[in-house]
Structure formats: structure tokens, C-alpha cells
Image (cartoon, rainbow, N blue to C red; front, side, top):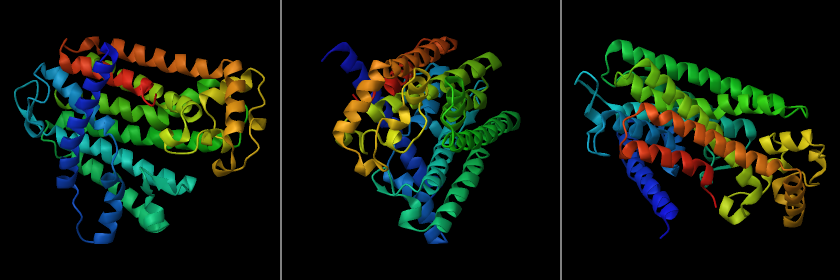
Length: 349
């Protein structure tokens, strides 16, 4: 096995091991209870899967800060800078629950029928139940973050960051909706949108454990910037995958973003290069588009340099983010964090 493949396997194994820990914690913290229908709806997407990348970042940051062997500490009683303990699994759960809340509401707004290979919550239940389920997860996330056992001042700082993050996510969603009616979006506007809608939650995931464990301000700031940059890279790479990965591997119709008229960094760049983006495909729904149409569209976007532009931007952001990890001790968990950043811009191929 090549060195790159071996490193990727090690990173994926690390993600999977922490995913299992987080899944167990979520089942413990958010069981189905009365009223059953509400909590079943709230748990629907949590039970459907997900890589748990954001809580994995949290646990890896904590491990790196402690300079201990990976997964050697009890996440429920993780030692902070004073030798006291913090329940990092509740903190990790809070971020994953916020992520799931956004997915439920996104699917309602976009009228998407599927998520993670199962019916979306509003399809499995109904719109009203889905809205309430999302709201329940939102409030539950803050309950979890108040129960980590961290000193009050640190706990409040973490709660403030998560609250600010939720506001930014809503702002990003609003910008995304606004972009649907515009064909003059420029790259800086697009990056601002994905930063708010996607990347800030990665930023919070990297910074919150540092806050709770008592890291200095510079370390917290650098970890937050790391998360935001790799989060931007993650979303831009998604734009590339939508056009370059076969439908059967992608899990949805290839080119669906293009057919649905969604703004991506690729279409924004191409339009700036004179490409008639709206005329690239004639189909009105992803189901109607043909493989030949997508191939022709991809060829035109490749000729404009737009797909390569997106690839380079994603890798540059990931590399910049990895550079910020120098605030952490040199250890295996820090290497795994860098590996996760690489995975975010290399996955899917």
C-alpha cells in the first residue's frame, strides 16, 4: 500500500473509532422519550448515519492539546489545564446536534426527499413535526454544552461561540437563498456564504474544546481559523465532486447543482470568464439531465479553468488551515487533524 493510501486509511480509521464513541454518547444523551413521535423525528437523521467529522475534530483537538496518546483519555472526564475534568462528549454531541438541526431545516426549505440514504424528516413525518424536531435539537445542543462540567467562565465562552455560530449559519442560509435569484455573484460573496453556512461550525468544532480545556487565546483563535478554512475547503470540494464523480458513487445525480441553478464557486468563476452557465444544460430537474449533457457542461467548465480553479482553492485553504496547527504540540493527534484536513479535499475519488 502506498504511503498516501496508508495515511488515508489511518485517518479514516481514526474518524471511524471516534464516530462510534460519539454515536454511543448521542444515544445516551438524547434517547427517544415522551412524546415519542417528536423524539423519534429528532433522532431520525442521527440514527441514519453520518461521518461525525465535526465532533471528531473536537476530540482530536482535545487529544492534541493534552499531548497524550490518541483515545487514551476518558472523554467524559477529560483533564483540563488545571487538572480538573471536562465532559467532552457532551460538547461534541452539541456540535453534531446543531449540524443535524440545520440538515432538517435545509431539507424542508429545499424540499429534498432524501438525506443520508433515508427519507428526509419532513417526508418520513410531516413538515410541522420536522420543524419542531429541528427546534428540539437546537435547544438540546445548548443543554448539552451547559453540562460539560467546565468552569463557568469557559463554559459561557463556549456557549457564546456556539450561539454566534448558529446566527452565522442562518445568515449563510439567507445569502444562499438570495443567490438563487442572482447571476452576478462574485467569488468573494460565494466564499462569505459558505463560510457562514458551513465553515463556521467547523471553526466552532475546533475552538470549543480549546476553550473548555483552558487553552490560551492565541491557540483558540488559530484553531478557530483552522476549522473555518478547512470547512470552506470542504464545501468547495463538494462543488467539484458534484460535477466530476459518477452518480452511482456520488449518491445523487451528477451535476444536480448545475441543473438546479445553485451558485457554486465553479459557476461563479465560469460566468466571470464569459460562460453561459444557465445554458449549459436544458433539463429542469436532475432526473431529466443526460450523461451527455453533463459531460459537455463539464468540458466547457474545464476549458474555462473553473473546475481547476475550485480544486486549487480548496487545497490552498486546506494547506493554510493545516499551517495553523503549529499552535498544538507535535503528536499523533495533530498529525491526524492534518490528515482530516487533507481528507476533506481528497475524498470521493
